Image (cartoon, rainbow, N blue to C red):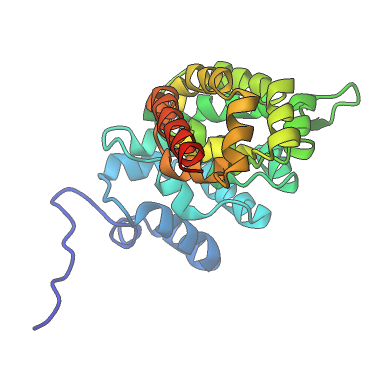
Length: 289
């Protein structure tokens, strides 16, 4: 039995169908196969009406601006076409979102983050919950929060984020996992989270009890904006003596975080209940001995 061929809906076009009606753009893209392939990979998940594709391939003076943006992205080599496509979810605004995104993605600060080990996929995780109309603005918020402009005009990683990543051995991927699908106020939520992460409480838990930030990331994965209140409550619950007592019994916080994985906003209450169970278990062991 032959596999069914994918049919493009009426009045919708894939890239090849559109190019067959636009000889000028077709000739340009055929001269740069890598650019054509990259654009094709962005657009292939969805079909577009002619008006949307005209917007994407709009000519500014003598230039096709968005084609030039894609050429630059390919030169940078830090953003996969699939990452861009994943941000084009709203069918009514896909073309408009893409046109707003492309110049933002070629921003030198995005490339600078890669040099600091921060992949664009992490930024996607943070902003993909934002409405399509605001995604470019959301990316700007991430850039403004993670990077600072120096007196010499160059950007560098913010001192706060540098401390969190280097001294506390946090991974930005872990941070992005927590903030996944924040719907608004990304800058405020990210700033507050970094403020908590550089606190002495996090440092003490790491030094004295060997509790790594990855454990908190596992528990709060996908918490979004609720992560701030949840993390603050978790830190209040994590009394040194309680955790040390469990550690002495061979129960490490990594085991606890595995059980509470993706508990998110419910994590503080779940942790308290789990600690009560563990304390009962420890008491029972002591009674038997």
